[in-house]
Length: 159
Image 1 (cartoon, one colour):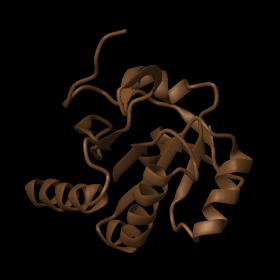
Image 2 (cartoon, helix red, strand yellow):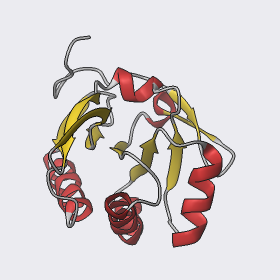
Image 3 (cartoon, one colour):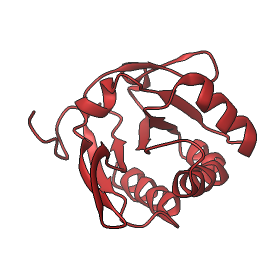
Image 4 (spheres, helix red, strand yellow):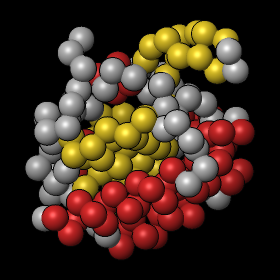
């Protein structure tokens, strides 16, 4: 698989969401889209990340940006997770790793010195024309959502 880069067309996909609807990236043309890929519902780091994005969801909406969290968890897990924390954004289920593989973020990683294969936490900002505006690895979870919001503000100001 070829590594994705900023400026390349964003791989299109459709995934089921916890709210019973589907998320179709193509239907979001004309808007910025923030795809934040995270490993697993209801774990410490993923909960922090999702809650921070949820707290800022109105700000993303005010900027006209669609916000969606994606993990390999099933829809039912997403629904429980979203209810438990009152999360504001949609969570898309990708148990077959359709989007995860298309975006090239399933691979070897190390956590606490332990190497294994899994989802590499990454956020993609998709431009209104359907290209990848930015690819942002997540080395630090706390404050990540706020950094992405600032990137959206910057990108909108350029357009």
